[in-house]
Figure 1 (spheres, helix red, strand yellow):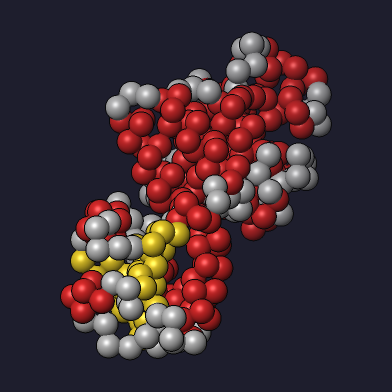
Figure 2: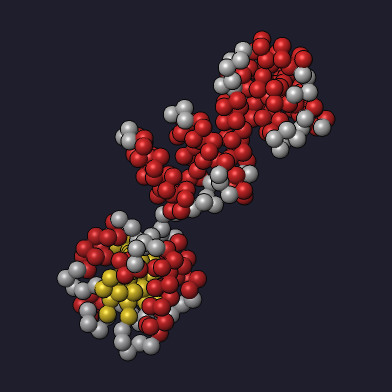
Amino acid sequence: MSEQAYVLAATKENFPELVLGNSRKGPVLVDLWAGYAGPSLRQREVLLRLVREYDGRFLLVTLDTEREKGIARELGVKSIPSCKLFRNGKPVESIHGMRTEGDYRELIERHIVPFADKIQAAALTAWRRGDHDKAIQVLAEGAMEQPDNLALPLLLAKLLVSQERHEDAHSVLSTLPEGVREHSQIRALRTHLELVLAGRDPRTLDELRALLADAPEDAELRYTLAAVALAADDYDTALEQIAALVRLASDFRGDLPRRALLALLETLEPGDPRVRRYRQAFFEH
């Protein structure tokens, strides 16, 4: 959207709605200027750059204090240029005189809601009212707009998991930029999803055990056995097979055996004796 949509001029007639009314929806920064004050132009240039940067996260309203002397008097304007930030129908902070861009930026940052927070709030609102497709759409669009923000794809994946759309959730996490994909929370959920998907193998535990007995070095088969055991709530077998993978093929699918073992141990109570026993696999290899 053009920056002009977020830059408007105030008059006596529109000030109540333009500034006070809009400030109840989000921050409104009023640029108080006058033609005789040379720094007014420099302040305007800085504020316009910030409008473009923040792309609608605050509204900039310009007020010609010479033309609108009544409003300027009501606002207690003492020096030009200056600016006032309005929230919830009243001025909450002011800057007097020309300042650095960083000063204006800090003022704005104190009052804007982070983009990711707004997206998450909108998605959760839609989810709670039962519009699950809308919630997922909002999160997907937000994640595309901020690909390096892990909060949005993480929530998106969790909502997909709650709908048992495990393939979709895994796809969301697997296509993230590497730096985000390798974050501990993302990695843990990816590992969980990989186990869930592998656990859908149609073969039974007995069939997989028999096959593994004939091919004990088959890492893929051992991993599938662990996943199917986990799906059957046979944690002992799952832990045993994943720990064996850590010993025998720690580089299987990158470091999947270690990630999977850690993910399984984190589902157990801290005092569970299996936690201590199987954590040794991390230190022995």
